[in-house]
Length: 388
Image 1 (cartoon, rainbow, N blue to C red):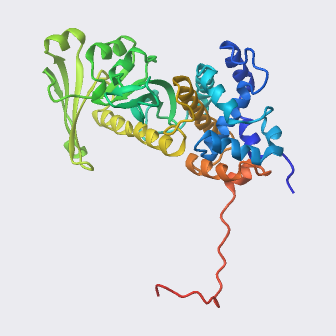
Image 2 (image 1 turned 120 degrees about the horizontal axis):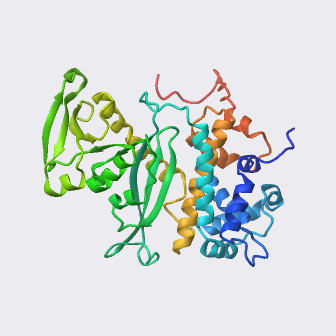
Image 3 (image 1 turned 60 degrees about the vertical axis):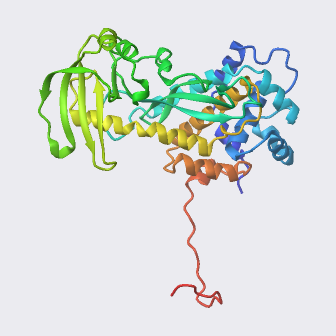
């Protein structure tokens, strides 16, 4: 009989406590705190993410039902809705933002050699944003429309491992293109974006930083063709051109040449036009890179379905941001565990298994890799056969 650590503790073993305490000290998270420290808060919130708790009342009820195991989970203080609510409202959300960013750096090293569908040595990022609707009367700081509140999650996703490397949480009014002003540009990397980010002055900064972009063009693009490269039309390519912008403002904002690739996607029956500042890669690779941008859409869909970021435990801005960053850190923590333990199951399967085994005393590797048992059928069963 296994008498070791419970599953939750084994998951939290991958949390670098030295990094966590550095983040807490940086923002004085435990200043004048006698009980229910930042670590207690994080462990309770991580438990809520892993077990899909819907409210503070759920968290309190479930943890108090397992009172004898709280010490083994690392929780040293009594758990109550009041303690959690106060901590979420007061403890600086940047503690958990810095923690998540530290975990992201660890995860990126583990997933550095993963493939994402295109044979390319450069780092490839997909940039996009998703909107999370909120009730304006409960979240008055999250302005979006006249009678509707929302926050936006601006995310830069590393396509190797689908690890978010940059996240900015804003109210719903912030336009996506302004995220380019906050974006850390990595020389030699590719940034794949939808046409909502088409702003030539900002794109020129990426070029000046020795990085590359692939973005969809708008229909009102004014340009002059300089040269047409030969293409294989059987691959879906229509044209591969070197162009110069001719619009008054566009030419001023982006004075260099650009590459224009036109591609017909047979799967969606759409003709797409891409702009890029890379003239070395084959035109078909440019089209494939943009197709990989869909991974960020799937990432948003996945975290909304599997993490608690659509219903919030607090209504203050600090509570919302803290919950989102803790959710991201839990996602990355499970991704790190998956790589370190060489688990073949998907992140979705891992989260589902962890949600029902979190208090069990069993090796976590056994819980996440155990094969399905064979179903034994009884030939003498009296169950009626519906289909013969």
